Length: 110
Image (tube, rainbow, N blue to C red; front, side, top):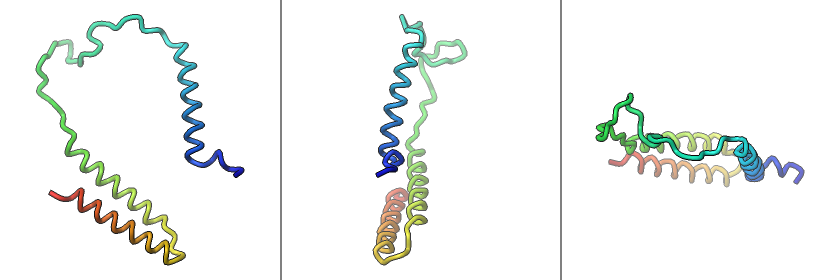
């Protein structure tokens, strides 16, 4: 109970409140926005007005690789931190391995 402040949920809540109050205090020092300048929402194209953008990035293929690497890193972390002291933890490790294999099957399907 003496190290309650060091637990992740409590530390996160304390830091969230601290930085929210810090941001609120610093926003009083910032210059007020009286009006928006013209063209601030437009993309910069070397001073030219381009109405039709030919490049429309598509990140759908990126998400598959991001999910794959996230799954691989979390799986590695979970498997390397499982204690092997009892049968219960070994069964838990086997459940993790089955979940990892299922996740990879989902990611690598066509």
